[in-house]
Structure formats: structure tokens, C-alpha cells
Amino acid sequence: MPSIVIAAHNEENVIGHSLDSLLAQETRDAIEVVVSANGCTDRTAALATRPGVIVIDRPEPGKAAALNAGDLAATGFPRIYLDADILLPPGGLAELVRYLAETPHVLAVVPRRRMDTTGRPWTVRAYFSINEKLPAFRTGLFGRGLIALSAQGRARFDSFPAMIADDLFLDSQFTADEKREARLVEVVVAAPFTTRDLVRRLVRVRRGNADMRAAASRGAIDVPVRAADRWAWLHDVVLPHPRLLPAAVPYVLITLIAGILARRTVKPGEGWGRDDSTRQTQPSRANGAAE
Image (cartoon, rainbow, N blue to C red; front, side, top):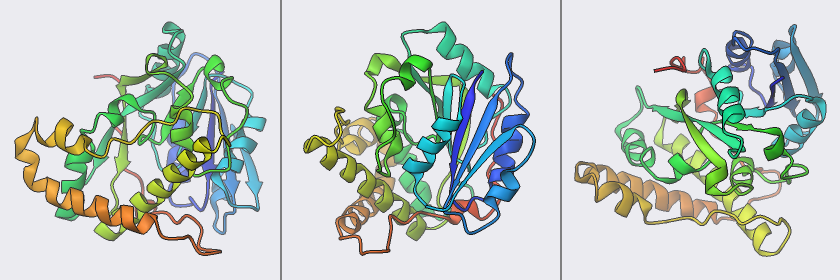
């Protein structure tokens, strides 16, 4: 029985649509859905309360703790970690389960992603025209909002560390041969609606990744963290696709600004921050799983 764990913080605008897409999945076995609400000040927990969904309502915010609480409540495998703003397409769950069952050496599977940049400013569209072609988003487990682990894969670690980069943590648990992108499953990831929102999202990612790499370097976590390739945008994207050269200017500027801001000291009470622009409206409807 597949178990889906959703860590949700103030997701009242999107959690209902996410659960609708999950509960409509046709699978051979029943599915188990756990929503681990954490520090919510809105109606997330109330909207998630429905037949077939286990709801945990934690007063403390924190995604790692919410994931761990969800894991304790979940009983089935594969174990699927899903962001509340991602819609699983029809047939997607069955395809992920099938992929893990038929390729036992693969322990972690992600869908391919399509960035929705409709109506975004040209700077955001330019950034993602390069970002979506980076090799890391073909070989890594991050950037999709969905990661599926087999029982053997989930046994690789005890619990999620108290860090924001949960997807990078999972990515670091597996070798290249143990993780795959399921090309028949596509999820739509909403791009930030403004350049400022994009920078805010990148700052959060940079801080989370830096925190995890620092923890690994001092031995606080025992995983080989993926090294960042700062020039992949040039040698893997722009040089093979010269038409993207104009997009490289805003891409580099936005990346540099986010890097500078990410190095600022986080003030007490400031938290990690997140881009909420994509959670103000209904998430983009995903395509079907099969092509």
C-alpha cells in the first residue's frame, strides 16, 4: 500500500486540489494519505480532514519535524513525499509504484517536471529557460515537489534532520544508479509570479543547501552531499544552445543577487522565508501520466 506524506504549512489555497488529485488516483492497492500540518494559522488542517486522509495538526512550524511526524503515522510503501502545491496527474501514482516494483535496484524515483511560466515577467521566463535544462534537474531528486522511495530506500536513513533542504538530503542518500526520473509522469511546478518572488525562493534554497553542506562538513550528518556546479548554466546549457545567450544575462544576475542575499545572517524570528506567490491561486492542472 503506497503511503503519501504531505508536510503542510498554511496551504489552505492548494491542499484541497492536491488531495483531490491523490484520492482520484486509480491504483491496484488502497493508498494511505497523511497530511502533517505544522504551525498553520489558516484552515489547512480543516480542509485536509476528509475520509481517507490522516491529519496531524502540529502547533510548531518546521518541515523536517512535520515529515518525521508524518512518517511515524504512515505504514505503507512506497513512501511518497509530496509538496502540497503539486498535483499528481492521473495514473501518476500507479506509474511510480510500478517503476519501483519493476526496477528493484532503483530506490528513489521522481517525475519529470514542467515549469509553468505563463504570465510571468520576462526575467522569470528567461531564468527558467536555462534552469529547466540544467543536468542537476535530470539526475537529482529535487525541484519536483515529489519524491517516491521504496521500502529499501526509506531504510537508508532514520529521520529527516532539522534542515530546510529535505530534497537535497534525500538526493544525497542514493547513488546515481539508485535514483531515476520516471519520464512517463509529469508534474507541473509553478514558477514564482515576480522576479522578487523568484529571488526569495532562490535565497531559501541557497540557505538550506548551504546549511546542509556545512552540517556534512562538520560531521553532523553522514551523507556525501552533491557538489554545486556553478558553471553548468554555461557549459551544459548556453554553449550547446546559443539561442539562450540573451537569457543568460538575467539568469546570472538573479543567481548572483540570490547568492549575496543568502549569505546574510538570518535574524532571530526571521525564519527561512518562502515564496508564497504560487500558493495564492489553484495550482496548475497537470497533464496525464502516459504519453
